Amino acid sequence: MQEYNPGTEEEVISETRKSLQEPPMFRVVLHNDDYTTMDFVVELLMHVFYKSFEDATRIMLRVHRAGKGECGVYTYEVAETKIETVHQLAKQRGFPLKSSMEKV
Image (cartoon, rainbow, N blue to C red; front, side, top):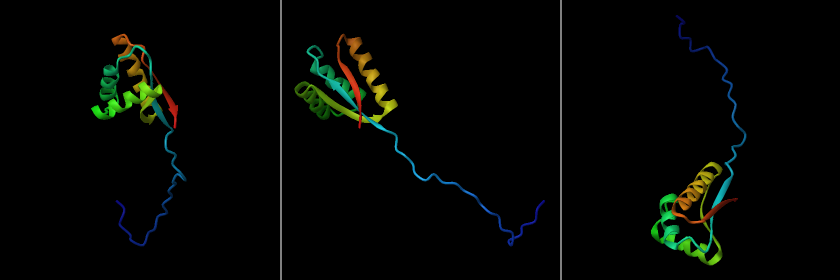
């Protein structure tokens, strides 16, 4: 067993990263079409993107009037998952709703 010797010094080598980079972020966008109902878009925004009823209605109206509307900004993997969820739910309900992502 080693004896404790306060006079002994040990050299500690540590490496630190010089800079951390934030992951790239992507904006998830819904695109307007002539068939998907406004009620379905609001429901989708509330359940997939966790928007309040008021925010979901505001986004839905932006999609309807401007042709597209932002649902949120996420990392690539999260954005990809949300887009896939939108497409699956729309297909299940018989709507051609499309969603895409744009790098921020």
